[in-house]
Length: 285
Image 1 (cartoon, helix red, strand yellow):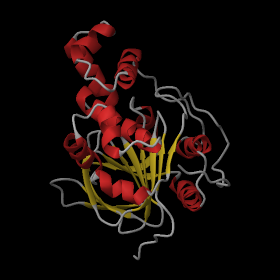
Image 2 (spheres, rainbow, N blue to C red):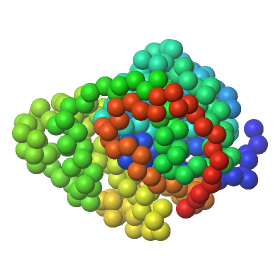
Image 3 (cartoon, rainbow, N blue to C red):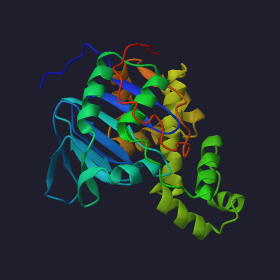
Image 4 (spheres, rainbow, N blue to C red):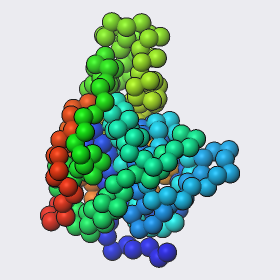
């Protein structure tokens, strides 16, 4: 399929979720640190798991935190929504998928509505807050209550985010919520899906791109987010997202949108019946 270079790919950054919408030229191999909902906007995408001969061809895929995979978008318009750290989105969406095998969920019941909205969003980008509300309506159209989270793990996630520039030890994090180290490690893995260190690296990627949106160079933004150097950042980026940082910066061409949305753990199911609006405004950074 020929590439459409007339429009820039889009990256939306909110505290709760991250959304990429665009065209990918090549297959990507990654080991993700956050759950994700992957949508083939124009047709099915191809997914293969490590060590498996099974090839998935699906319009929508839900992948768990820590999942390794190879996805071939085959040049079409795709969307990757990285979900909330505390697993509320993943647990809700896992019950809305038609099929489940080998840790992969496929066939989101609202995929057609999301495909139409994502096409419109790509053509006419929305402001960040409006896009967040629309995405929420697409992910949870019935405004179902989100699963409960462990408040101790939620506080640890908030602590990691608020002190992202330093490596707060697991011992210090455990003491701050009156847990033993072993118990925190167990609860954090069960709730977030990856160890503390993997989550911290993932959030540093998020913070790096908010810095880029505000005008910092990629290297300076990465170091400010807590990466030791550009090599550390590039390695983490490629392992987690399957691309180099320069690849995605080139693809975005300045179309990064940063918003507040809802905080991690802060949704109780809202916008009931609101549906997915047609984008009508365009702002870029």
